Image (cartoon, rainbow, N blue to C red; front, side, top):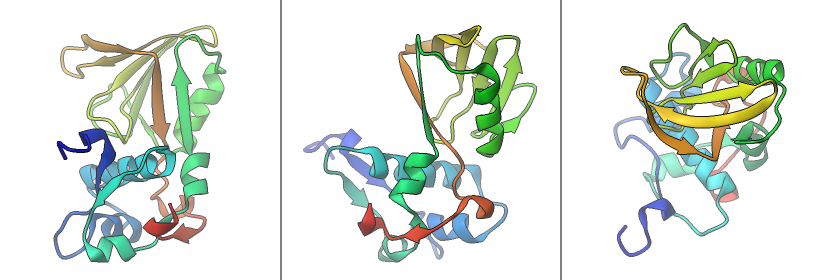
Length: 178
């Protein structure tokens, strides 16, 4: 990992009896951590312009996953200064299997407070606060869900829909197709 850099390594699969992808694709209720790991891997594999080192089990490598096109179609990049219709963005979150809550706690949660949307992406380890002024994204900040304090400002944030839900899977491919 030190030779090629951590950003070039993708770890997929649980390494237990059933792979993480198999568990997520074929069970209705899956562990949030497994979901997050798979969605992050799919996003990185599908969007990377650099070669990646994929570490997985043989079983996981051979399992069908959503296609590269399906991953790309269900990826939304939010940029500071960009105009996004506020209501359309909320609709995208709902259609993408994010759960609306009063406060974000785990991956897949989002909350609305006035012109602010807190969202905990499936592919991140912390939630983000997206502040709108009308339909313009004013700021994107990673924050601590307990203290509610900002940790880090970002210029952009990639959001991946939960494409592992049964009603979201249109077509399957193999990891080698990505």
